[in-house]
Length: 254
Image (cartoon, helix red, strand yellow):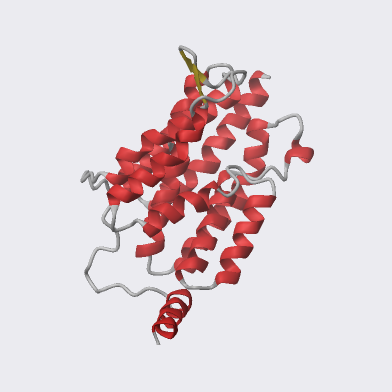
């Protein structure tokens, strides 16, 4: 009897989408997403300026590491609160397509055709959100398909977006656990082999540059209440706009 009940509960968990009480918070981490997105786009801009024009200046890239996990977190909030997930996915997909030529021109201006399938971050975010939508709605085929595509093809950050979003989603009501799991991912970044010019050497310790994403944790798991009023289209439009600006500067200067 106990075994049957356990199997029944497992089956229910795997096949029944979660429900949320009306008016109850759907996660207990930071809901100040406009503030978080503003930090993320500025960090991304610094990162991209460094990548395009100052590739040897590591600090540009260190600052930029916080952008991607913040974007993933904001998408997790959107997954839980948006009224129409399909429109949300459509907007991400639309701007991923719009941004792709500008992305390639910004970072590979002299190798456009060969690098065109080096997919931009909005493509990664789209597939990560699609996977998490599949998980939330218990459409496991969708989760696995999106995970496979983003992990095996040439997408920026690969499957890291899904990994981040899984932590944010599963620990949405347990901020301390979520923060611990998020930070624990970066232990492997300590004590790496020297040689990467973007790494940080502290005494005899070499720290991989991806470690700097850990500094997003306080922003994600501790609440802020600035409640900035910024139209959502600003954040979508900023991505292709800043890539286009970098691409134009690349052609003018180089």
